[in-house]
Length: 192
Image (cartoon, rainbow, N blue to C red):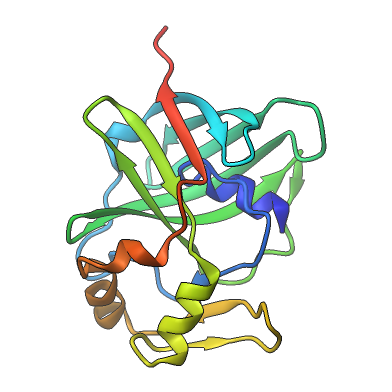
């Protein structure tokens, strides 16, 4: 699961080290999924553990973006490949992320669906990427605010199963960002 996090933070900067919290439909299905040109290029930064890394966002002809994540090279999972799509819902920008490959090996552990990733680019050009906050997302499902299921156990993975229209409406709400943790990756564009 660590590789998915790495790739997801790719999905802005991806480097998941925990559970797979996914949606059965990508965010933006009814609102429009379009590649965000602001992401294109190479970004350098650190993850929440202080580990440095590069994220390379490469637009594809099908409208998706391939993200190559290269970390500092001092341990396992030094590089990962993820595929993302992007959308805007309300005031927030979202990625639908899926790990494709880790250290040259296909990812065979990823569940169906995509991981929603919140990203922001501020006025100074800083890109932050935030992953779902597991407890907040679990609470949203168990309280009935959004349709989904929670796997057994104290740390059960969450799958949001709402239909595309309800999913987009839920993530367009002004408070949707509260379901995401503090930035997992903070990055700045690399200029050549």
